[in-house]
Amino acid sequence: MSLRLEWSNEQNKVDIPEAFFGRLEQLLQLAAEAEGLTDGEVMLSFVDDDEIHQLNRDYRNIDRPTDVLSFAMQEESDEELEIIYEVENEDDVLPFEGILGDIIISTERAKLQSEEYGHSLEREIGFLFVHGFLHLIGYDHQDEAAEAIMTEKQEAVLRQAGLNR
Image (cartoon, rainbow, N blue to C red; front, side, top):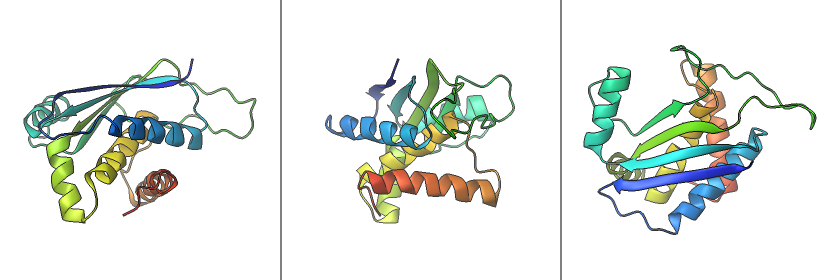
């Protein structure tokens, strides 16, 4: 098996050029490579604020839209998924295989945030995608130390892909 990205763009109100999906494939490969991950499938859906608001309310009990949601398939309980591997050499076997999970991005929120932060929509969606991917494999940002680790990993992938601020 290899890493695969599947996507849906049906509930999206913001124009996403078809060529951008190649960039997302690149980001997936770079982020996975950085984590030593070679197998799995990620489903990406672009939605509007209304749809992500409903999902955020239904699954997180937060009654407002958000920019990105991740639903990991490797979770075994309602608790946050812990990172359970470290790749120290080629002989290590990673526990992730099959469907890693779903990443859902509000393109309306991404467009607004790209304007607020003064960078491209491509950069903002790339950031949200990598952020969502890291959540799928167990990273979180519940405290400052964890947030710093996650931020550095995101920025390293984005720099490697040429999506700088």
